[in-house]
Image (cartoon, one colour):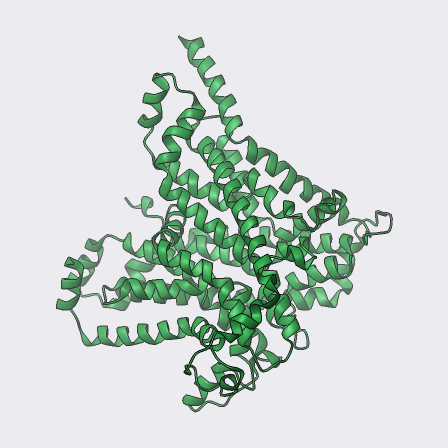
Length: 284
Length: 300
């Protein structure tokens, strides 16, 4: 409230100019999603009049056509399964590793943490080719194992880093009191640190969920059967089938369904999206 | 007493390893082992079926002396990061500075500018491909309002890569947020002092704001370079590397070599070349950091 008062007091012509720039930029940033949504609500005839962004009346026929056969339901189920497992694995394994790096003073710890960070430099393709061959040998291609198993072994460096920053920031007295009372380290981790780290864990959850939902290269390589496709793979396959048709309605309808869960998550948890980014950026 | 402390310490060491055990197993089996394996494979002519024959440095010699696609895809990838990294960094700082003024609707704008970043993925790339379409794309409609002639942006050798660069300018949410958080970290009395000395807003930005946010910018630039060198999904979905290979980036070449042609030996060599390039660039950027990155601790 105080901020707003100050803002009004010192409002100058340059500020009006900046405000106009911000509004124009915001419209441009919203253009793709707006166009996607409006195109999905048009009849094929309305779509031929491509110069008009908004047209009425709206219709949901494109959603019905795109959804037909229910395969997008399969894709959504697959994506939800994969994302759910990935998030669970990441929350458990990354928080364990982060706790270890944050709370113990062991010789060689810092060097080891440098190793953790340096894995960010390894291009995915270096490990992807051998892993593809191994998974093939184990008959794990076209299953969700290659996409979910690594997350149970703290494969997400970024999230280890983020949680370690958070755990380091929590006061040591927390654990010392419990240790004196005879609590083991795992109890200290599970009953004291984890409950206190809820905001950070939520950031990790969101990070990982959005990452899994949007990921394309790994599912493309590991999943070849349409019945196992994630929604991102399914959408691109759907685009291929639609070919050069002028009726982009069904494709845009399914594209909108693809981004809708992330969009809803963002609307409700915007704070955590931003906080995660800020935390790693600054302290990094 | 001494021994008791030591005992405690030993026990703690054991717990440290227990806690990081999942990471250790993951690192060994999903990172280190495949790395070693792909390194070994890069010295073979393995194509998925044939026996693996060690052919020494042949793959690497081929890559550097005879492989024109290697050089052209590397050139396109470098072009991409050389333009996108500075462009997006400047744009992100620009947006962050605008948002740092306490203007009405600030949080709403921040939310909107961050939106394309979280939705970036196949759905958005497909949408952009239609928006940039030559016959009925909405980008051309908008340009028509401004009196600019339409163009088949993704279908022209000259404009396909710039179109992808343009699209990626909307995915600067992460960088913008990091810089904005950095800006809010700058003590306000610095500005008050500068204003008393009669410094203009431009001077204030380049002499106070920018130096103080360089650590934040640095981290971001490094990550953007590493990510940019591996760009794959955008051209794969939007142009398949075309037209006339003008968007055929290194990631696409690597993917095709391994997964379309099954040349795993050669592809592993390509992947390791990319890894070495990333290491070299990271080292150069780290070295250069002492020249332009300013840590506040140094003066405090």
